[in-house]
Image (cartoon, rainbow, N blue to C red; front, side, top):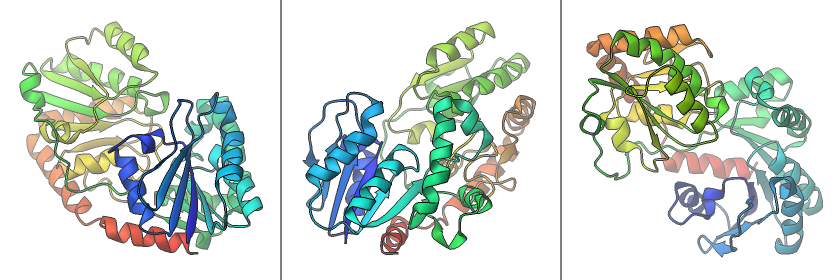
Length: 365
């Protein structure tokens, strides 16, 4: 079986990255896996393994991604391709559909984000266009891989046949990788309780809501700290918001952190305030560490993470977030109970071998 993958994940091109390691695993499922990676930075084509090849588009801008994927597929992909799999039903999905028509192969569209959430379409005009592209492309796919039951339900409600949709989450290691010894309580000894967030600093993650909700928590107890790991376009705006609420002594921006294991292990509460998620792997990582979770109702929430092992609040409800933080800060026993129950649940998730076998089955559909 030969597979052509279309991806926007540039970390596939980074040596020793988690994404590149995952591509090596996928390569064991096929005779040949070619990956066209959308990028605007100059990269070289190279072999990830003896079965896996990465081909960057090196586009002039993101506007050229689709045309460059088509060009590379025409120039570099020779012979029969059994499956074209696209990372999303948007730009890579459009390219995948056009390439599939030329190669006469099967088309798998992947859905990693909850694009039918009302918050997704409202985020930007580009997202509005993407929603409409996806609605037209998904019925043309031979199979659809989604990462959560929430997304599957939304596609079934859209009218897509249930038998065409398979839920296959991204593997999250239940054994944390080795990480530098970082103890947040030693690093920030001024805080008695640490609320931790790990997120890209982008509008859909709604970190501004977290800061506003935390402002009331900090006023009630100045010994509580909010530590945020991540980077993104919202950084400056969020720093201004912290200054506006006079939280400079209570909120810390850690920047991008590659390995978060010790952060999860040494925090007291994990907070997620996203407007939408496809899956929400940081929730799994927090649960693996036995960290009590406060999250908005997004992604895998309702499946693995739920009201029985975490505190789940409506999207955008700042008052509920404040109440949840104050409750957990005040009750260490509840924190321990929630963390232990969440950990016991995630430790029962399928292992990597089971997920890889399921991926192989999907490519063979």
